[in-house]
Length: 595
Image (tube, rainbow, N blue to C red; front, side, top):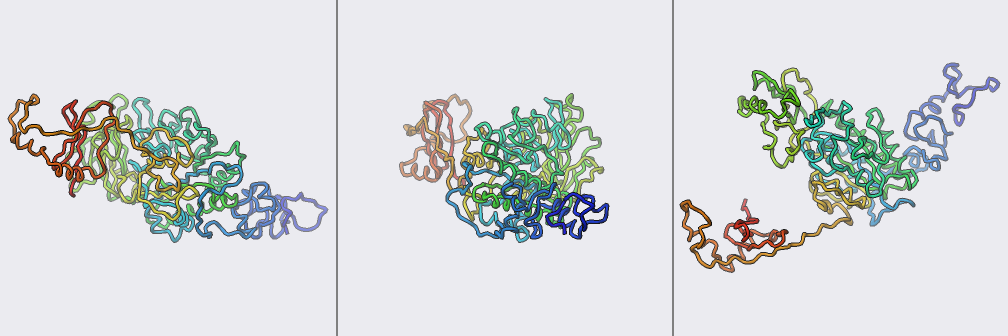
């Protein structure tokens, strides 16, 4: 047997079988050479056979008796070799305070992204995902998390770590052109490593600026010298790095001495997004990918438990967007709308159009003139709506950036807007659509001593996650588009409690002294209605004023924060105004709509 003899030097004078690396060539290996000496170097897990093994050079991890001391055990060592219960089989626990080993003054925060994990997957396939389901059951989760538009990978990942909409942080799509830089950004090129594309302050920099350390095992932007700084520890993205290697990397960082150990970590895996693109969202390929993602989470949790960190670490598991099925028979060809196409098009679920000859023609009006036919529905039904970018729905927050092209097509779900019939990226999964589509909804799960247990919360936008992470790290967030404190209901003891702004100007009353105005306010036109009748509507009794204020100001009166602003409360039956004596106009008007 090769038990405890792997890689022993070959000695001709010693009789019997061999266990060194040359035994296969000599054909004198012991019967268990492969299982004992070779297979362990390819495996990330202990087996009963491996327990107590002699340390084998080149192994991913060890199951030797001294591996806990050496800090290189496989994550299931205590489970297989010591008989401990796996994390997934333990009951939910309730903690009033973090239970951390010595040296962990601040509970570490791990941000774990499973790309393209749409919220519906968890509802449909939860029975196949025991680790994710336990995280959901025992921790805090939202019904879903709303992605920012466009629902693409880079814009949403960077929004999550900055709290900014894409128009503010600059990563407006996976592919884009900047006329000021005269450069093209894409996922396949090296331009994406240039700091000039990346605006805002990602959370790893926020932490480092406030004397914490950050380790990023992949995240869009984490391998870029943003504001002249990389994360304390980081890896340049490489999709050939296995998920086991990524988990092992995070766990090794957690094993570092206190002076070197990060406080904040990111972890990213490509699934189930990659399989969703290849096979579509409802497919055996996606189910297989979901199970792999679940196993990866289980490996992380068992590794944390083996280090007594499972009751110390705060963990956020989320996704950037969902996934939708597309069909090659559901394509909108621009050749059906134009005799000649002389513009550049970013095709797909969030199509954009710009001038072809850039930067020369980028700002010319020729493009808009040429696109006029697009504004007229020439086909029925038409499965996209064309917009000039400033006219897009304001809830997208997708206009105020030079990189957002002049014309945008808002595409129906499961359809794609493309240039011509040469387009073939269809009959598979895709994303980028309207962020209100159910198929674009992402997961959000949180687990750890700072989060409430067994709690479901309403959906929220992913711009809010940045402030939440800053609170968990006890640091002050940089300016962002989120509302600080809006996710306090996820936490047992909120770190930040918002306070109302102080009002610097208080209102007076607006008594009606006479029904006929003494000042025509410079109006020269004929009155449509009788002025006396209109003014009678302002002459409310005390009881009518009280009733109007109660109905139209159910949440209280808006505060006026400007100093020395002279205004009064002007109550109508249909609304209430804060009327300014300085500008002779309402500063604000409040009203209630019945339905």
